[in-house]
Length: 416
Ligand SMILES: Cc1ncc(COP(=O)(O)O)c(C=O)c1O
Image (cartoon, rainbow, N blue to C red; front, side, top):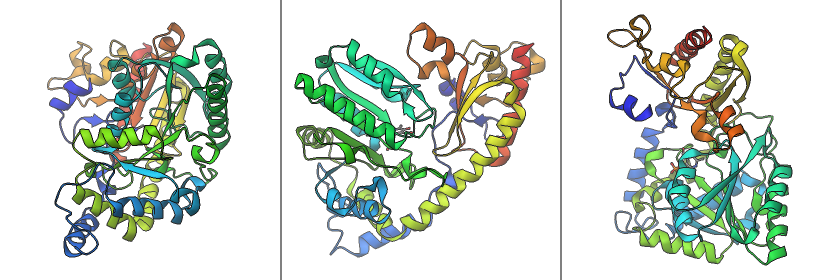
């Protein structure tokens, strides 16, 4: 639906709750223009910013990321520990680092949470990996079920774990206890068979945890005795996706060296000018800007939460989201949400009933159906068929209000 919908999307009429776009208003256009000018004017610090870059990234940016982490106590890592870590800047956002990971790791089993970040899971499957999933609860991937799974499989076939710390699609924030338990368990299980099993912690949405009651997030690297954790971050959500700045942080291991090599092979790390502008932005502006961005998403989340509870509450078994990122993940009691369902057809105006579809088409609404975020076991499929992800990144509050009312109409139609 997303592809066909985006072709003939009508601005101001149709509603896009499907895309993972950030809100344009959170993008600091003017400050980025200042950063651009600043970088070009200060060649003593930002040498050759319009020339080729390097495979591992600009020294200015890697230093700026380290300083950003230390100043804001990100991951509770501290200056000393961070100084010992390698940082690799990806060619094209976190996405390219994840793709490179798929290229450098031996084909085998990848374990991730359910529901899963379907975009990367599809990449992994296309690359010949077998993806196994472990359901999450309110603290993230369940470690008891992970332990069971690790007993059932041949750990030698395990390629890596992929953990999204504020999960996409569910927006569930992994607790510190859970991070620790996973790192310790996988380290122990790997040691038993003499195998190093990397754990990727994708922290794409950690910069936009806006619920201030959440305990400060601890990096999985704090418990990583064997150098197995690779954290993947991005400036997409907190500054601007178009900069295409993603980064990996880890010990200086073979895996990190292979990641740098792969980044070189595909045309170096991100355009140097974008890296230098990002370095300047982190040095000069990030503190206040990050507060503004979080506040913007918090307002939208609070509004949407109320609206969901008021208008859709009676149809829902549960929902998650509203503390971080910009997704809500809904699980209906009975209503199905997949592309053949009445609910979906109502919102895509493909019911065949002109009083509903309209001529021309009535406002349409796009979301991500849950069935593409779950594995193909019959139990997971049954639940996935009643789930959906809505994004409040892109659309503004008045549109979100219309969206929930439309979903309420769709729910009434589906229940008829
Ligand atoms: C979980 C997750 N990881 C990575 C990314 C990609 O980030 P980037 O824009 O840096 O490629 C996204 C983007 O939506 C995401 O949701």
